[in-house]
Length: 257
Image (tube, rainbow, N blue to C red):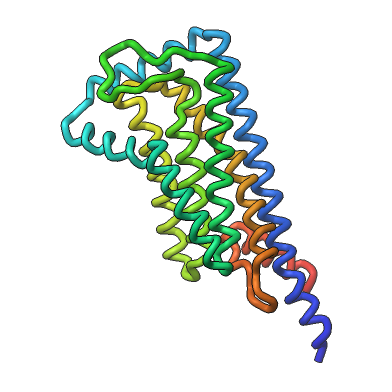
């Protein structure tokens, strides 16, 4: 009966999961930031290849505009609009104030929104890229084009919401459904910005790539806040993501052998 050894292994599992999650997140965040810088350099240098790709995609989307697609794009625009995002952040902050159990998640969301907004505004002012003029846009927007604010804020806000839900759910199928829907929403919001003619595709790509590192940072903040406000003896994390689970299981089997 190796009770002490079993207990030690059990206690070390959350640390292993956090280590792998952190490592994977940092690697992906670095890659995403590198992509953002590559797009930024191409846009500021007015690279011919970037201009050609942006123009080709915009014209293709314009040629395939349909009434149903346009209505969907207008709805997606609302999901990334400042009034709606600010409302989500405010409600989340209030919920965290009154409910200690979800305070970590509830207070991470408005921090994520504020940080994303700051990144968007600073980058727009620095790059000051004019919006597309290839055709009359379906929606009226003001301000600079790079990066797409809707794309960046969608990556952070809906990425965090999906992340929180995946920690609450236990079944693999339900986690997969949430992850899939999260990705689809983020992609749809971004693509819709080029569809309506208010952003170049490179603006959208930069929004996704620029938002992901901040998303990973907010996930780390959530882990810290969750432990700060968790009740004694109450598990902080639900079942870890499948990739971290597989890596940890493989490590345990190796040690056992």
